[in-house]
Length: 257
Length: 257
DNA sequence: CGAGCATTTGAAAGCTGTCAATTCCGGTGG
DNA sequence: CCACCGGAATTGACAGCTTTCAAATGCTCG
Image 1 (cartoon, rainbow over the protein chains, first blue to last red):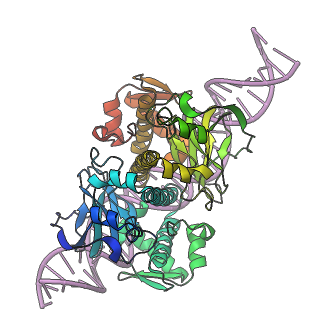
Image 2 (cartoon, rainbow over the protein chains, first blue to last red; image 1 turned 30 degrees about the horizontal axis):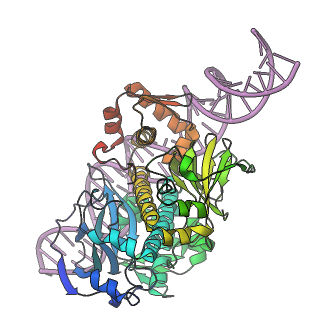
Image 3 (spheres, each protein chain N blue to C red; image 1 turned 90 degrees about the horizontal axis):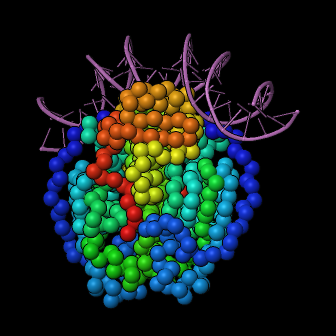
């Protein structure tokens, strides 16, 4: 079960800056065009936020007036049922896009976004998005690609939650995030930071915290990975992929051209 | 478990026609602009297909060279694991969009699409899509909205599969498809056609056929619905919504502006 | 050092799956 | 029009994976 949600802390606004400073390449929506369209940059200047761990960027049902590109840190996307059951639908990493919905002016957002670590965001007012797409079709296309990628990932997890065993699901989660993190940070490290509690892992793959703990023990005993104290090590990617029924040949997450 | 997949039948090509004849309003990607942009219509003329029930439109791993708008009939979107386990990720209804992926030229498709009934499709070559977005940004925006809607639905199901009981999940599936079908057909009927087997329902909500059957019996006894012989009747939407933990106030599927 | 959250672990209950057999039903051929 | 056929729907019994409930231990931060 999800832990009690914390009250929303006021977002601390940081330096007003355009997104040229974004450290992420190839994924962010607002970044790569900046140089080529200074006029646009002037007009749609975006804002940068810094928020502490565990705070919410927005909550289900709200009407956030901005869209966000995650620059730094980890964010958890989730939904809850009235009785508190929680389902994590996405672990967002730097470069990911947050807060989108079809018609931002009319629809409330259908999920919550909570920082797992201190987070840096690039914010963009929703009012401008429509005009931005009209003025810069290449951004629309990028957005479509980002969505296609996120959708594929969502379906992949859906398959896991619906049809895989506990061991397969958990191994999948760990490996998927591991590979995605390495891709985003352009790293080959065996060990990565992993700021996700066992309860959150459970909510991501549809299992209880207790069962996650037991399953983690089994996975550890396989010798292929290690997951503790906010760190994840995967020693044998092939082996974990086998356990997870993870098709390494068809990686979903690649940089969206 | 999924039944054996049938071999792909050759697609029978129908009349070559643009999409102005599409009976669906407000959802299709290629339809509403036709009148306003005859020049575009000329250039990106699309093709219409008719295929029989149970045939595949495309399969996981293929590289379909067209994108489709579903004009008529029901289509099931699913993924499978090597050992045959299947997860249905979407029941597509008329007006839905099929076959999209981030970079159609490079990526294979990550799911299969199978007709549940005889189906009419409007096909559009993938080669043209990029240019089309560039030339007609309003189509890109429509596409983004369609994706946003599909994504929200996917997350909604994910929540169900991960966190809800068998009864809740099944009731959700039935009600969700029921409401979506009525919206698409602009109907208020109590009974709708429902060409989905119990096995397929199971694969959609992560349960076995046997358990679907038992759960269906329970739901029937509640008196709120009836589901048999390819038909679904929902007599008490409120009641089913309660059982399903379905938030009626926040309907996901609306016509994408 | 204490408090609060996160991690572990054990035991038992329960929901869902598996296995198998039967019945139902729509479509086909005689 | 009727018997037959194959897929779909049902049903019973039982196994098993996960959850639930409880309690102990470990860890991090103020």
